[in-house]
Amino acid sequence: MRRRVVGAVAAVLAAGMLAGCASVPGHSSVQVLRQIGDNGAAAVPAGPIDDRDPLGLVRGFVYASGQPDDRHASARRFLAPQASNWDDGASLTILDERFDTVFSPDGVTGDPNRATVRIRGTRLGTLDPFGAFEASPAPVDLDVGVVNRDGQWRIDGLPPGALVRGSDFRANYRSLKAWFVDPVHRTVLADPHYIPGARTTALATRAVEVLLHGPSAGLQGAATTAFPPGAKLRSNLTESADGVVVLDLAGVDGLADADRRLLAAQLALTLAEVSIPRVRILSDGEPLLPGRPDVGREDVVDLVAGPPASAPLAAMVIENGRVRALGEAGQDTPLSGQAGNGSFFVTDAASSSRTNRIAVVSREESGTQRLLTGPVDGQLTATPVSGGSLTSTTWNAAGDEVWVLADGVPQRVVVPGAGPARQAPLDAGEITSRGPVRDLVLSRDGTRVAAVAGGRALVGAVVTLPGGAVSVRQVRELRPAELDGVVAIDWRAGDQLVVAANSDRPVSLVSVDGLTLDPMPSVNLTSPLRTVAAAPGRAMYVADRTGVWSFAGGDLDAWRQALGATSDARPFYPS
Image 1 (tube, rainbow, N blue to C red):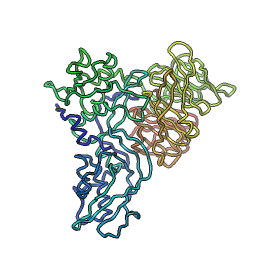
Image 2 (cartoon, helix red, strand yellow):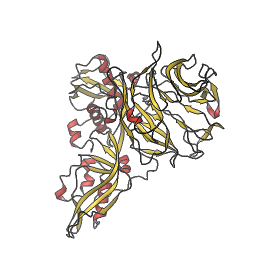
Image 3 (cartoon, one colour):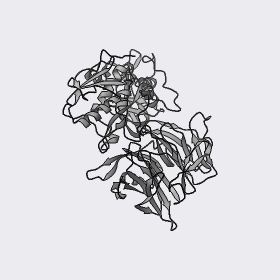
Image 4 (tube, rainbow, N blue to C red):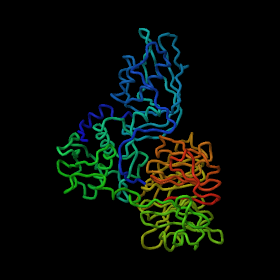
């Protein structure tokens, strides 16, 4: 179906654009955010109910603030004329579901027609003006002034910015994967954002605005953009006579050919998220890519960071010192190379689907553990890393670098295609300062690392410094109020993690920014849990006290046994 894309960027902003394995999917469009356990947002009245008391009035105002249309027109109906200049676009704070409205002890005036109502709740985080969520859990105590005029209570004093319940946010905003650039490997990677639900016509322009603004703070230093400073839209997005969306840019004519292609990939992949399969990208009226005016997802898939789209993601398992391919119904076959033939007693392993290499931890007779690498089905070679305990082996996106926990300290080993492996500088102090590190895994696009430290789930950006050293920065805790006793973590997708914990919430799915948290079924799992494995579109695996269990959905909300009667098996997926 053809769609005409209209509306200038300035008009979008004036309308309140926002209040406040990175594999390319076969079909991609923005999705309304949902969460397991949501009961849906409460029905929002068209305006305040007559004779509503002050507490109910303010509560209804918070409910109505979840609708961002027309500068929060529904919420503005709760305001008295003197509050008509409310700056709803100053910020957007997302609240936990449960909040209270009580009379503020600081607002007693003695006037029966005036009152101060305090909103008490828990902040999950804030949304920046371009749709990036910043987790910042904290208590909220916000006072709102109300006045009674002609028998009706209305809000006449409130601070700038909007408060929105999490369920209302999920009902009225949509997720958007905006694509940016890995400055080291010159590939593109996804960065989650959220934009108000709207017609495709408005979503497209908003998506371009997100790209023009740049990556979120959570990827600061790890991602950049191919848009040069000063780049902008020359005109509105339009539709050509042959049904292709036309996007004309200014300020990009000086880009080199490689940068032009990266910019085209950013646009094509991001607009595919809002159901635009192909886009005609122009620079000052001429094709951005000479000879290829129209660009779609399939034209730039080779630039996507992470494993190739065709890479197999069959699960493997380490058991009794050997690495095995894990099949259906508990069938497993040892790998043909040294990782699986018993040449070494393997206690930990990770494989790279991009380079078909494997890294294993071998336990020697002396008890020392050593990291080795080599072809999945071939000979293994020792690296310089050894210690009393090596765990959490993980490959980067390019398949030329391994990270491992050596006696609880993250270590980085560069494994070139030719030549010996070597240790390389890694500053992971922002992780190790949070407590003992138990697990560590790089994202499939290589720009983030997830970790378990001090029983908490963490995520940080992987920043390459001048000279080649690497630092983990922008480290954040994911849902600390709900996720405690965490023991293992893995990437289910580029924007979602699976977390295992020895708590009343054994397995959970959490978004990389911490906005959404979905508890998974726990039927058949027995504490303590030991490890977890996940991959895009694949069954999840958990190792517990009794064996290895899998969950792929549709299993009557129960985990199915994949390997039983084992206490040391560790499942994993290639990166």
